[in-house]
Length: 215
Image (cartoon, rainbow, N blue to C red):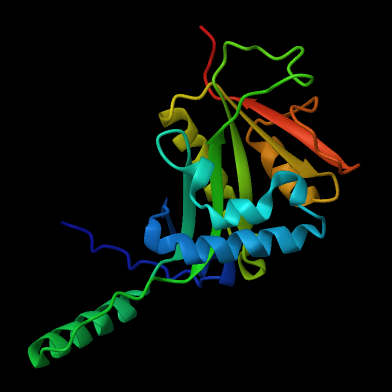
C-alpha cells in the first residue's frame, strides 16, 4: 500500500531569507547604477580617494575594469513571481494596444569589480613577478542588505570571474576599522600581506589570496 505523501512544512521566511537577488556582469545600461554604488562606497569610507584618481575612474567607467582583463558585477533584487506575472499581463495588454514596453531594471543592491594590476617599484620586492595578479575593488552593498548574503556572494562571484580571466592571485586593501568586511575576506582565504601600492591611510590592511592551487 502506497503511503500518502506528508505535507510540506511551511517555514516562515525571515527578512534575511526573503531577500533574493541575482549577480551579473555590468553592461553599458548598468553604468548609472554602478556610478551610484561606487559613489556610495566612497562616501561610506569617510576618506579622500583622490590618491586613487576616483573622480577620473567614475568618469571613465568601465575603464580598467573592462574586459578582457576586468569585470564589474552588479547584484540586483530578483523580482517576485507575482510581479513577474503582473508584468507579463501588462506586457500582453500593452502589446495588444500597440504601446511600447520599456524594461525597468530591478533595484541594484551592490557591486564589486576586478582589474589587472602590476606591482611596481618600490613595492615589488618580495612579490613574484611571474604570477598574473588582479585586484578586487569597490565591494559595496546597500545598508539594508547587510547580513543577508549579498556581499558574500559578490565576493564568491568575483573570485570565480578572476579565475576565469586567468589570474593567479587576487589582492585588495581595506581599513582595519571595517571589521565585518575584513572578516568576510579572511573567511574566504585572504591573508594579510605587505603594501603593494601607496595608500596614505594609517589603518589600511593589505590582503592577498592565491586563486590557483600550486601543483
